[in-house]
Length: 329
Image (cartoon, rainbow, N blue to C red; front, side, top):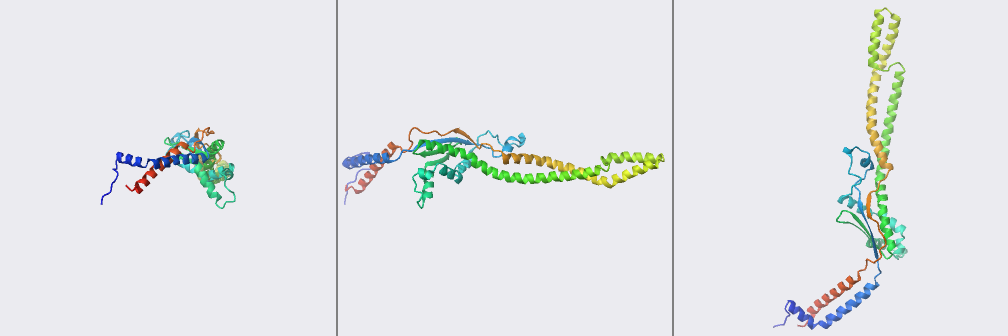
């Protein structure tokens, strides 16, 4: 049994297409008309975008207050891949999404029925299909917003960019405030302890003890001289002073040493206290905006010519494959 097959080459394909040219032309024309009508029914959407770079700095105190040897990266330096990925995660946060949905009343703007059982699912899907964030090859982050209203698209993109600092600073401040409260408690405890030591030292100083070693040396010489001169009255007075110094001198020296140690601790803790206070009470921009969004004058979606061309080519190829399969040869 023998059958005739078309050669699988350009000549064979062209010969086959000539045989079925009427069908191929008809289906292609129908595809063109259908895709044109379909593309015209699709609502125009306008695109607005914001391009920004993340900063490298998360700690204000380390960026601005510390010594050069201990300073973090320059707070004016652009972030790299890691910071860009972190920024994208913030942009995708529920806090920003919920804020945008509420501020721009997107449930009504997207014509979603508030009584629909799955309204939130539809709303989030619509939000995610119209708003996108991605890292560019230059390590910047691009916020893209599509909307039927060009002003809406620009306003949403700019608002999202504004929210970045608010969300990131809120997260950082939460931890910074907790750290500051801990440091503040320790700082106040150390100040209180130093004040107690100072009060005790003042009480001892009131007894005439000012400089233990020098006073002992001077009084001992004077006591010896009084005894040599048979000045027993003066010797008695000096002896009482020496007894007092002997009684409280050890405690005085111990407190002086402790005071020096505690003051050194307070000096070190004071730096931490100042840094943690700055972090808890101050804010700094966490991004560098390169371009703000503006209303687009031309629709970015749909690309009608692309829809028509792609639909026509797909229909032509599909028809050709079907004809090859059903051709009686």
